[in-house]
Amino acid sequence: MQFKWNYKPPTPEEKEAAEELAVKIGTSPILAMLLIRRGITTESAAKRFFRPQLADLIDPFLMKDMDVAVDRLNDAMGRKERILVYGDYDVDGCTAVALVYKFLQQFYSNIDYYIPNRYDKDDGFGITKAGLEYAQETGAKLVIVLDIGIKEHDRILAAKNLGIDFIICDHHQVHYEEKNGQYHFTLPDAVAVLDPKRPDDPYPFKELCACGIGFKFMQAFAKNNGIPFSRLIPLLDFCAVSIAADIVPVMDYDKEREINPPVQENRILAFHGLKQLNINPSIGLKAIIDICGLSGREISMSDIVFKIGPRINASGRIMDKKEDTNASNKEMRGGRESVDLLIERDFPTALRKARQINQYNELRKEEDKIMTDEANQIVSKLESQKHQSSIVLYNEHWKKGIIGIVASRLAETYYRPTVVLTRDLTRDENLAVGTARSAAGFNIYAAVEHCRELLENFGGHTYAAGLTMKWENVKKFKAMFQKYVEEHIQPNQKEAILNVDAQIDFRDIKSKRLYNDLKRFAPFGLGNEKPLFCTVGVYDFGTSKVVGREQEHIKLELVDSKSSHVMNGIAFGQSAAARYIKSKRSFDIVYTIEENIYKHGSVQLQIEDIREAEDEVPAQ
Image (cartoon, rainbow, N blue to C red):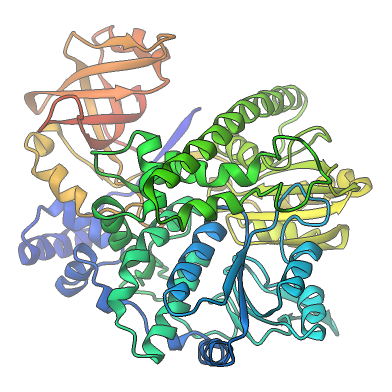
């Protein structure tokens, strides 16, 4: 991939502000500039950033309908009604269900949970026929639904007619209907709808995941009932897992909306959730940590994204081992197995369940590789004919549990908005189900919404969306979607861009202080990405070499012209640059600064890109 380097040198005003802030908080101007660029310009804001406090969480009752939701939950408990906690089969849904169920179970026993099965013909995504039947058969009078529901008008109305109330906890975009040439948002006829993305919701932080909304609901319930906040702290590890895996912003900083300093509710939840995950994780997560080989090391948001999250997702992605689409929900447990694990209290049992979902993950990886290879071959053929601003692929034999992963990989590889579709053979072969993934900040939800006349159902947010349509509409959708993208995508959203935070020399990282200061910026995520640095005019010390099973990586030992200090680095998948590096000519690098786990106490550069030397990094 050819990256474009985007570096904006600091203005004189920014330099002055950074120097002043550096003195006040006792750090280097480099680190202070990173804070300035994140909208953190005062000493007090910097202290809140570096030391996130649970006391700074937003009052949950500022969220629209929160008081109504708490009252209805209290009434259900007072009347001894059956409560069903119902969620989506992905990481966000499963962790949200586990969090709400575990917390309420401490105070109330007449409670159950339900996760729909992706491959059951009567079940699948959302509030389903099978899900409503389960609620009715088990006598549920109140359903708390998480990560779904914001567009489920018909199902919730049907439930209401059956005497079943719903509290919706969702973080997706609301439904809009056209009236007299204008669009107006509509909400399902639920008792309460908790969704900060409601246009009428004044809640200051809009980017909570469903697990975060579930946490806020339980926070409000605890506050209303005099339950100490400390009872909620053991559940924060679920929040950290969900925030990382669902890739929601950890900070909300938008100069146009004058959010300054940024709202940091997800950062607070993730910070303390990671602390809980590392010190005293729930038994189910501890079993996953053991299976992942993460025991004994500090777990980061990246570990969740690449190791913990995929395993929680796996049971909902892989079809029942019997491949029996007519099996009952008990036999085809799907995502429910992940919730079973997350709420488990016995560690040996949890370890056995974790091994089972690890097997699902191995199957998922095999199917993922096959489908991704097939998708890449199709894109390569299309590229030889005509370049498109987006990618829309469909194959009726692809597994619908895997298409989301394939869409993500294609969006990352080709840097374009991507939709991957397959025929819904397990439910209705006349329907196509699909998933959309964004690239470079393009609003993928708006592009999908533009095609609403061809869709049976859709939902999501800026970065990802799901959709369903008649199979006969797939080609029309592809043309309409690609036309919208072509007309609305910005030039910088078509390129693979590395946003460089600062241009520094090796002498700036000679000691470990810079790395230790950078660790204070964690947890990293959307809105608070790991800082990228650039150093220009570096040279091979003479000992760099190609490594890896297929000789695809470069292990580097580098020097620059400002010091004699040798820096170690690793460049994954960039062996093509080895010949130039060994030519003893200078080159420029963009990298993150990481701890070298093989040499305790030292740091190394994880090099993202290498190119021939220029006098300075050009600003975009």
